Amino acid sequence: MIRHRRGALSAVALVLGASAVGVFGLAAPASAHVTVNPKEATQGGYAVVNFRVPTESDTAATTKVEVTMPEDAPVATAAIKPVPGWTAAVEKRKIDPPLEVHGSQVTEAVSKITWTASSGAAVKPGEYQEFPVQMGPLPKVDRMVFRALQHYSDGNVVRWIEPPAANGGEAPEDPAPVLTLAAAPAAGAPSTSAPADPAPDLEAAASTGDDDNSLALGLGIAGLIAGLGGLALGGLAFARARRTSVPPAA
Image (cartoon, rainbow, N blue to C red; front, top):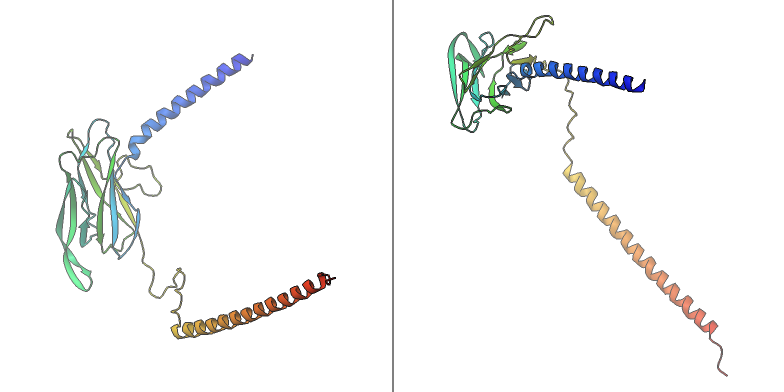
């Protein structure tokens, strides 16, 4: 009876294990899409955005990445951090109305950034690469949806261009990288950071230090005098005890 139960439990465990492997095996490639890190930034400011590109192919490497900026959320500048073995090209487009950047009118916005791998620098299967970009000022919109094209060494191109589903709908099969933008704190809003310590009063500190030194010196002298007095009293007591203990000569 016990053997039959153990056999049935083992069969159930094997079935559940095979099902889990099948489910996660199908889910793994879908999660290996191009993303941005961090996923949030502040409107009106500058941010360093890392486009994280994993290679989900088992046989080919990633050789080129194209990221197209959203047309409805223009950005005036994009500074590229060099990635060893990769070259980067930034394209711009005319915009109307212009953007106001630090009091100046800017009539061009970044339209696309392309990274291309040199020989031996491609992202191999099972690896990923981050491509950092400092961009801004960030537009005053809720999010920026980038369109990314991932080129493989075997000629395949994966298009990560589908916007996120609305109202909690089903997630797209090839989701585009999304950067969520939060509104900047209002002027005069209370800060959540701890207040800075006030600057120290150097004169008061010096005066306090002198008083402390004087007090320490006085206490030291008093202690020395007390110690000498105790030593003298100890000597007298020792001498008196010695005279008392020594018997008179015959």
